[in-house]
Image (cartoon, rainbow, N blue to C red; front, side, top):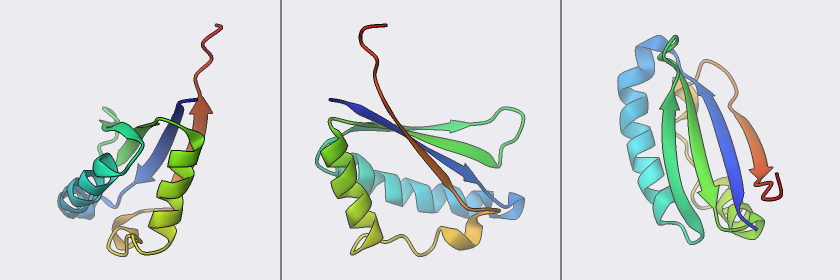
Length: 98
């Protein structure tokens, strides 16, 4: 069953240019990861430091493998200094019957 993950990011205003560079690199890897159906980045119109990565995965298992990768050999070390707070991650399944 497909899974949607929303990664909620709040950046320091002075870090936005660097954030674009880091996320472009990170998301190229994410989009190429097995089971990733795509990632879009949403930028809050009222607050350009607030971004959401809208990730689509072909299964919860594919997402779990990706999270394990990011916790281990694919750990992102240059993103944390750019953040104004801890990121949030929420996962959803699609309710096809609704």
